[in-house]
Length: 145
Image (spheres, rainbow, N blue to C red):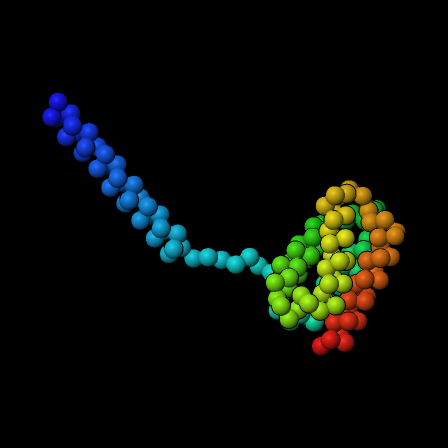
């Protein structure tokens, strides 16, 4: 009976020591491994990035449904929209400007269409709206800078 208790206690102690040891190894393994940032198309200059995004997306808007590379352009546009919004959404000096809110409205509309209707081209009404909003955002950002 006494040997069974000692064996049981030894096994519990061994399990605790192993779990602490593995936790320490995992902690230092994660803390010492390098973290890499995702590559971004944004430069950090809000005005320059906004003008670049506007020009690129206006070109994407003009793509017809017969274009052979329409899927590639759609994916690049979604990536660019994600990069732009994630770069500037949490910047207090930028996200309160009229240019950013106008850009965000246009980008949300375009990304929403691309994600929900991936195989359909942009409707004419949406193209007109996007062109207006993107042009307005470009004018505003140039005026604000």
